[in-house]
Length: 147
Image (cartoon, rainbow, N blue to C red; front, top):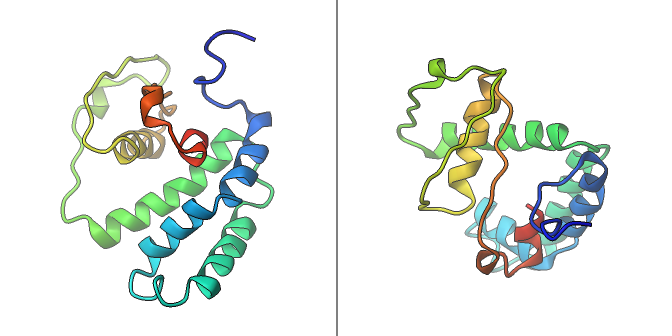
């Protein structure tokens, strides 16, 4: 065990337990409910939240690797961009060699979505995804750390 184990990316054998923890987190399921069904979430949480948990469990059943999980998340991001984003542009990908590693440094507007979009674009264009380092002051909720 090293002093950075608590902030390193997950290995494939750690994905299934992390998914179980995330799906067991009531706060996350509530947030997904409010995101997907903003008008119903306040009135029918007792119905929506168990259904959302069941659907997510079904979609994530058998996911045992980081790559498998990233591919599933990529479909959600694609749908979100198609449905909610007016314009999304990327430039400079042609300058990245898929066989090399790179260091990207940035400030952020959204601690989760900024790197999610970077990973989505890289994955869709045949590159490995990035490993993300963020301050532990931003990881106060267990499900945020797992995600």
